[in-house]
Amino acid sequence: MQTKPRGVRNNNPLNIRVGNNWDGEAAISRDAEFETFTHHKYGFRAAAKLLRNYQRLYGLDNLTDIIHRFAPPNENHTTNYIDFVASQTGVGAQSTIDLTDDALLARVLHAMSIMEVGRYYSVDDALAGVQLA
Image 1 (cartoon, rainbow, N blue to C red):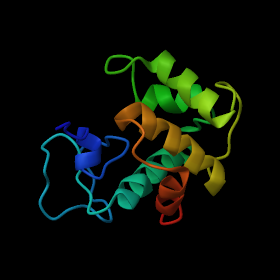
Image 2 (image 1 turned 180 degrees about the horizontal axis):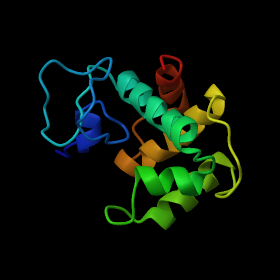
Image 3 (image 1 turned 180 degrees about the vertical axis):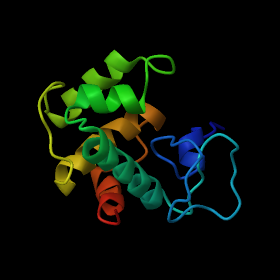
């Protein structure tokens, strides 16, 4: 029997680390390092909030800058991550993006979830979380 990835078990499709009091956070965490949510839509919601904050608070307006912050090179193959998300979304790595666009943000989060946990979620799953943000 194959074990599901950690982020899937935690309903945390983007493997967000603990440290915030999120809506939809599980009362009892399954993990000391990564958030546990009651449903994956809340994991996508948290990720949407994070990326929108990156844009709003830090002026990160392209996939390269956003992913460098979210998935830094000391923990990830960041260049591969950026290239994958860019190819999946049809957005250039250096192109300016507007994450207030729910459909675009859902596509970005969906692609990032594939990098983080594999192909467990759909764009519609990501959009359900974005619409809660």
